[in-house]
Amino acid sequence: MGKLDFSPIADTTRRAEIVALLRRAILTGQLEPGQKLNELRIAEQMRVSRAPLREAMRELVQEGILTSIPYAGTFVIDVTAKDIDDAYSLNKVLDEFAIELTWKLRDQRFFAELDQRHEAVKQATRDRDTTRQIETALQLHGLIHEWADNSVLLETWQRLTSRLQMYFALHQRARNEPVPSEDMHETYVRLLKGKDMRAAQRHAREHIDLDFEELLAYARSLEQRASKGGRADRARQGHGRPERG
Amino acid sequence: MGKLDFSPIADTTRRAEIVALLRRAILTGQLEPGQKLNELRIAEQMRVSRAPLREAMRELVQEGILTSIPYAGTFVIDVTAKDIDDAYSLNKVLDEFAIELTWKLRDQRFFAELDQRHEAVKQATRDRDTTRQIETALQLHGLIHEWADNSVLLETWQRLTSRLQMYFALHQRARNEPVPSEDMHETYVRLLKGKDMRAAQRHAREHIDLDFEELLAYARSLEQRASKGGRADRARQGHGRPERG
DNA sequence: GACAAGCAGATTGTCGACAATCTGACAAGA
DNA sequence: TCTTGTCAGATTGTCGACAATCTGCTTGTC
Image (cartoon, protein in one colour):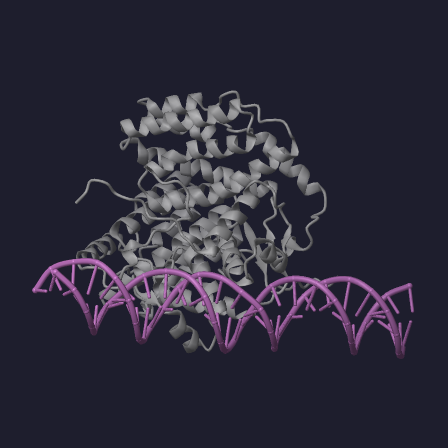
């Protein structure tokens, strides 16, 4: 046995590439909320047939960033202030849980990775690259979820993150100046390195990160104007479980 | 305006029906973990072409109960003891959160619904219908998530529930006697009706529900024997985010 | 017998075409 | 003027066929 272990090679199906392309377009805000995705047009733009495109769209629907109405179309999800609020409050709970699980698993590699990701955020901030700033910040916060050694938690957090990333991208797009953050992560990193788990958890739960209040205000302002995308507001997600009734 | 409001009509695409059929087959254990799903065979059994079937399978992959390997096939996820443990521990966290959110929203309708679902469990228990017993028990526990008025939480819980339901069904299938539970939900319901939120949360976090220990033991015994389904163990889920490394 | 090359069968991925459905406009009638 | 029926255009849902890939067996060579 060689001591070298290889990572799995990249998926080479068109479907996988389409998923990546679409996700990036949505998460960076190039595709606006409520906007309809015309299969024919996108398919010929990508030089692909509709079959893999449709399969890719099904995946993104389940991922929660698209929504589909039979015989009407597939739309980018609408962003309501409540959605953001919901996602954010759940995120705090998950953070707290992740810290608890990660705590006793922290080691040198963890701290090194933590510093590395923190550095990436600072670099993006210096570069005034707001998109990358959002991306790296979320990756920094994702470390505790990756390290927690709970696959279900990680998966859940990633789903949540997709939306948060989309929200932040939208916000950043609206006000075209960089997010203020000189360095709001200093405390976070320091607490994760420290000895007081409760303090770290408290920080995760209480600290309003990444301009959250302003993001919410922006979302509320969006809800004032009518939904411009068409009928995406009629969309119902989920898979047919019983709803409160 | 009439005072009657209609609910949206059912989705009438083949895809939606296929999703429902497959999900039920998986969640009831008719399709075993690790088992490969042959597209051609299933398609002609259902009298459907492969296109809607494949789209349905993509949805279930994202839902987390199938896993796909390009050019190799799509498989029912393998159940490891760790998976069950992970899902269960996250579930407790979500329960605690749901109780917190639901607490101040409880009203007469909530209590009525609670009793109704509790009654459904007892009925299924009397009928010795173990499949339905699992189903109703999960629905009972789902009420707090539906009532919490946090769509992201609900969605997350439903994803988790899919797996838990699958695990329990497997367990129940293995030992062909009904789950003992005379009525383990009595305390749960009583606490949810009471005035002490902390007590309800503590109960959710500490009470080992639904024969969990035995379920874990069963899962561990499964891991001893080699994975019989083929190569589903090589499967990697997730959507290409950076992994720890 | 061990091993690599290559072939045949089966299965998945993709394509182009057709069927089903929706939308909006237009006309007929009250 | 308002409502209702009809129709054409556009878009989504589905189908059958073909291309790409994997698997296991066979064959040939040493």
